[in-house]
Image: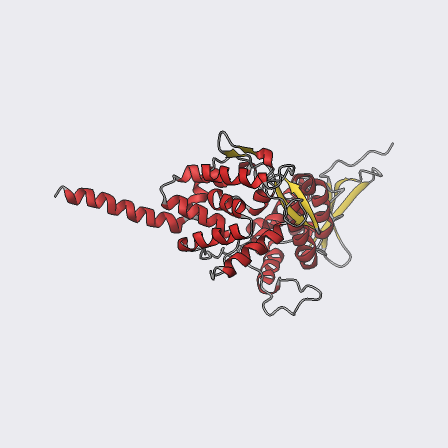
Length: 385
C-alpha cells in the first residue's frame, strides 16, 4: 500500500514561466481516499514560502474534503433544512424562507461559500436597503423599493447564524458577516387609542357582541394570536387567571396553532374580576364550544385577520384615528405604567424577556412617571422650607 503524504508536507519549485510554485497536501478525499493537492504561486521563492506556510496552516483548520462544494445558496438551504426548520415555530418559517429565497439566494447565492467576503455581504446589505423590496405579481408597481432597517437586520441575523454553523463544520475559517455595518433601527413613534375613546371603543365592541374579547385585550395586552387561541379551559375563575400557552396564525391559508412567541410568553396573567364576569357571560352564549372566542360565523376558532378587520371597523365607527390591533397591547402597557404598575410586574404580564426591554419599549410612559416622581419629591422638600 502506497505511503500517504502527511497533511502539511509541501515542496517549492520554479516554473517555466518564471514564477515560483508551492504544492502541498491539503487532505484526503473522504470517499476515495486519494490525496487532495493544492498549490500557491508567487514571484519569488520567499513569497511562495510564506504563502505555503499560511495555506498549510489553513488547510489543517478546514475540512478540505467539503470546502468548495457549497455555494452560499446550497449551504443556506442545507442549514435551513438540517438546523433551523426543525427548531422554529411555523410562522417563523415564513420569515426564514422569505429571507432566504427572496433576498439571500438572489443576492449572493451563486458565490462559493469559502470565497464569500465581508465586502460582498456589506454591498448586499447596502443594496437591500436601497432596492430590496420584492415586487409581487398582480400588485401595483412599487414606488419605494427600499427595505426597512429591521428587515435588513433580520436578514443579517439569519445569514450570520448560518455562517457560524459553517465555521463550526470547518467549511470556512471565520464568519465574514461579523464585520458588516448594519443600519440603525428607526425609533417609530408609538400610536395608541386616546384614553377618552376607550369607553366608545368598548361600547361599539359590545354592540357587535364582542365585549368580552376586547375588554380582555385592554386589561391583559395579549397578542392577537394568543387572545384568539384561548380555550374556555384556560380560564381559572376562582384565581382570576388565564393560561397563555399557545397562539394561532394564518399560514399558507390555514389556521395553525403553535407555542407562543418565546418561552417567556408562556404565562398565567391575573385578570380583573370584571373580565372574569364578562368571560362567563360570553361562555353562556356557546356552552358546548371549547373556544373562548369562537367565530360568530363558523363557530370554530376566530380568524386573526377577520378579528383585525372588526377592530378596524370599530375604530371607524367611533371616529377614532386608526391604530393597529397590536397597539392595544401598547395601550394596556402605557396605562399600566401610568397607573403605578411596576415595570417587572408589567414585563411578566406582557411576556417580555426582561424588564429592561419593557422599560426601553415604553420609555415615553416612564418619562412622564419620572417627571411626576421628581415633582412629588420636590413638593415634599419645598413644604419643609
